[in-house]
Length: 310
Length: 137
Ligand code: SF4
Image (cartoon, rainbow over all chains, first blue to last red; front, side, top):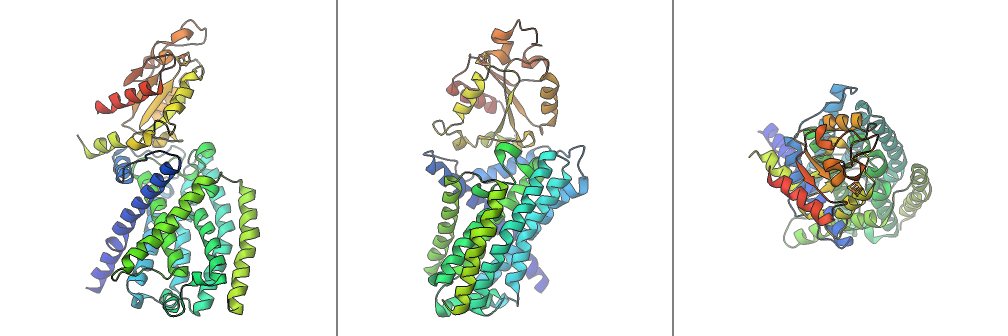
């Protein structure tokens, strides 16, 4: 029975099905808000679902120079990892009792796996542009991961524990992390890292539609590409949830707080979409300098403030 | 009609190929993708990789240099794929008919689903052409 419960958690709610549906809806919000920014009407709400179904009906091509197993297995592993991260996060938010010691570290680790699978998948495609995209993705991973870990640590330091449940309980008792100086700074850094983690515009360097034609996704077609898009959509969903859990008091589904929970989520998405729509893409060196320069300094300041008690 | 085809009708991703056009047709294609016409309402997006394409928009007469690439692009595209020829050049070589380097219109080399005539065609005409192709699905 317990096993069945785990399988249900992983496959239906809050795992695969829930993550995929909400993730795809999030990409619709992204496209719709972008359209409104450009003074257009934008696609209907079911557009991402139609795209996914269509991709599943198309031919799957494995390029002649590709490493077959790696090329096809990587999207699946990435999707499994994204789903797992989402399951852990949501289980904790719905029922703090299911938290375990160090789950924030586990989720932080698992959230890097989709990026790594895309790196391997891009390299396995045998396409020079795919390999270029993979190498850029790797550089980006090195750049944003350091400030992200430090800002996660500020939250952990304040709550005095690595488990999400304690972080949420601390925020319940002492007010949200965002209410303090260190929390605000950490939140800003986290949003920037989220932008890079979801490969959204100032940092969509590995995909770079205009020069790399999709980067590490370039050779994916048909169902594998649908899976790759699902990974991107899931990340778009998970990363804001992760930030809200750490800095903004998490989600609460009793009574009216459902509304504020959804509003928090939508607010973060809209911030990310607005950043995406108002910034041009930066070069790799600018990106690395940005994350290892100002963002790293800010995250260390946040950490110091947290230690001295602000 | 299968579910996949039904979905294809709602989200045709276009890939743009220039086979030796004078670049005017290409500019008109870009016009058709601007916010003024907002084709994303119908799920139409421009994609950068041929592997993601559902519709090929081909502009221009086929030159000797570009023919092998055109054939290869067509083979690289995941099926089902629809081919739309934009401009008089693609339909029947247009003003370049007597060029020393021109080897026939597009449909001599790969199957074509629709022709959009005009030199260059208006964005409205291009959109109408795409709609006609989707209606044949
Ligand atoms: S049809 Fe006219 S506008 Fe289009 S490529 Fe040919 S010459 Fe240029």
